[in-house]
Length: 242
Ligand SMILES: C[S@@+](CC[C@H](N)C(=O)[O-])C[C@H]1O[C@@H](n2cnc3c(N)ncnc32)[C@H](O)[C@@H]1O
Image (cartoon, rainbow, N blue to C red; front, side, top):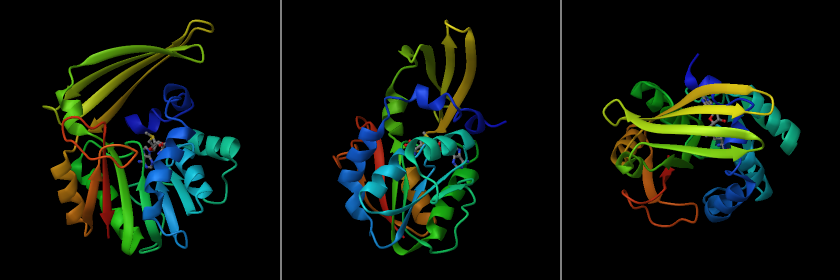
């Protein structure tokens, strides 16, 4: 089983509870005007639907797509999302050519595959489903900052679970790997899994986007549309046009 088929299960909402609805609303308030509310917009890798909800609240006609059954189930049960959710793989989008006015890929839902060809296919598929002139917002981790940071192990507590995360670089700095151990002393629960991301630089991403037939209009470093600094920004948010 690949890491991304295992890591986004029932424990994911506990691990990333701090990435909440408020953060999604803040981001959509700042970037939402890039999309046309008369056209469908895709929340690519929507997870439990926090961006799908925030985009819908803003009046956008949003579709959510994700691979994870537990997270899609949570989107239905917790957020009342149903009609606009699709299960699929981001390398092969279940939408026809030119059917979307916009695509959003939020909170580092990219770079999950070992092979560059697979990661490139996500960008190519995004370009395929966008109409000419459609907008793609890619919210990726800032690889430059991650590469400069020393390896680190952190501990935190959420809902009675202890979460230990050990972060390191691998493949000569091409990947960042997080080994995660989750325990619950109360009921003896113990789980161990891994997250792995290909650390694309801004230049590599721009090339991939251009090779897929899109152009980059802007890059921002945070959810408030602040400037992008390759060494310091937490995020690398790329605004593209097909
Ligand atoms: C970091 S989460 C972000 C979820 C959501 N965008 C958010 O901000 O809450 C990444 C998401 O990518 C999904 N995912 C992982 N591999 C996928 C694949 N091959 N195709 C589609 N979705 C995938 C996971 O199930 C998970 O929901």
